[in-house]
Amino acid sequence: MTVLKKLYDHLFVVAVVIAYVIMFILRPGMGIDSLKNSSYYLKEMLLIMPVIFVLTALLDLWVPKEKIIKYLGTEAKTKGVVLAFALGSVSAGPIYAAFPMCVMLHKKGASVRNLVIILSSWAVIKIPMLLNEVKYLGIKFMVIRYILTIIAIIIFSWITAKIVTKEDFPQTEEIPGGLSVNTSACMGCRLCTKNYADLFKMQNKKAFVKSQDVKIDMDRLFTTISACPVNAITYVETPR
Image 1 (spheres, rainbow, N blue to C red):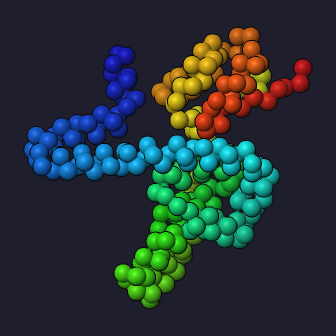
Image 2 (image 1 turned 180 degrees about the vertical axis):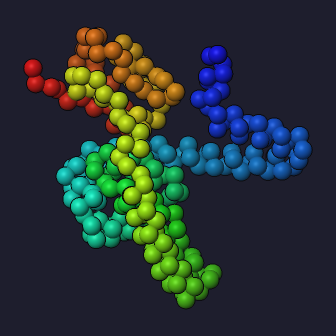
Image 3 (image 1 turned 90 degrees about the horizontal axis):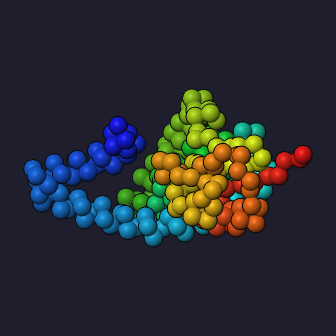
């Protein structure tokens, strides 16, 4: 049962491995080319994602929650939409680099609608992309495509905001005493379990807090919190 559970927990990875095996058997040449392409993108992710995690953690520390709510929250309305388009358009890097940042923004109060706009803008209307589009396809094509894309993004962001609620996002795991782990931000680096194995555990490649019955060594806890590369661990002292 344990083996089956592990396979189920990593169903996507298992499916990819099976697909590669079948490809190598039926079309060896295609399998080799696919493996080379996958290796390229994996190397790219390994180079880019640590930098993105660090930048996201710094933004999480430097940008107050009140500012995110004011400019990207549900009450931001038009100014929130404009800012979301701007953030996505001036971004750099592949689209998957936007996901950790959007997790942080949502945690601080950004609306679902504005998250969709940021991700969509990042993917299809980045400024460097538009410049290349003009070069190869012409200004008229770019302008028409840009306008229609913006209209489509606004429509789809509104629809998504009506369907997806806050409860649909991965929830932060909390225990009494103010200690919590943002499992959606956790990258599974295991530093917390190495630094404080009595308090943290790993489950499905995510960190969790063990039972609150353990007596917490505050110096050790704050050292562990500081070591987290994505600032996923928080502690707020509750009044006695």
